[in-house]
Length: 306
Image (cartoon, rainbow, N blue to C red; front, side, top):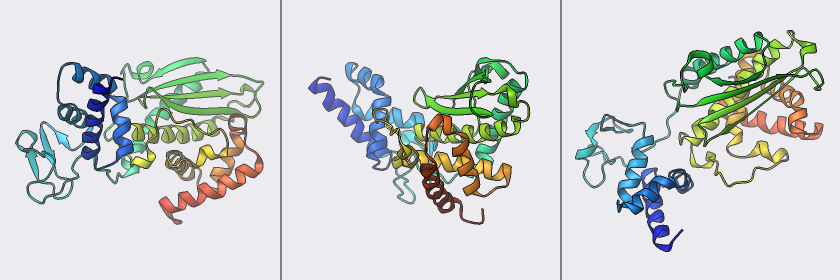
């Protein structure tokens, strides 16, 4: 990176920080995610402010059809008439109308997507076929899942059957392509099928909701402390589960199981870690410690009567 381009990149990053309410870590991630757009702007002599405004516009939920809606008083104005600070409300003076974190009704926003995706996966499992499936394309022909309140994303669902594995099944997931794709791997022990189908469906609910939370994070819908930097090396010990971006994903996935199985968070969490031993290689002591830790986090988020 030349010194001249580095200065240009820094100016874009600083403008992005102002745009997202001073969340420097998130601004840095946005800048790196849009590196080639910034580089193009540099060569085409576009101003850093133009580039940062374009990036912010592309992800700003409050800007639609060229209009901005104030998050504080709901006043609406044309972006083109906003002057030097187009995101500051001219009625109440509120400044943080760019990427405000919304309090989302999770059940109304995420329940339908999770149910839809798990149903499509379950249909594949019930056919007892193996292979890699690209959803929703292989199910509905659509190229992306497009749910209200969620960023666009796709799923790669890898299903295999193996009688040599320890236990009834193994399920694991991750996001790739900067959060645009969820990869879910399911290994089924045919010796236990179909009696293990109930457990599989439950854990698919958990893993899908877990990874959707990472989709939210990577798209900028969550607080800066939940932003995962691409160059961060993930811990390989129990500390992996205590990372600031993993905790909300874990407890929201576990909440699906708490509701489905009508069990306590402690029971759901401990059972999940025990089922996942082949994947995560945790000791019984680690599992007990994480069960206590994540149960407390669950109660902090949802309360003890949820």
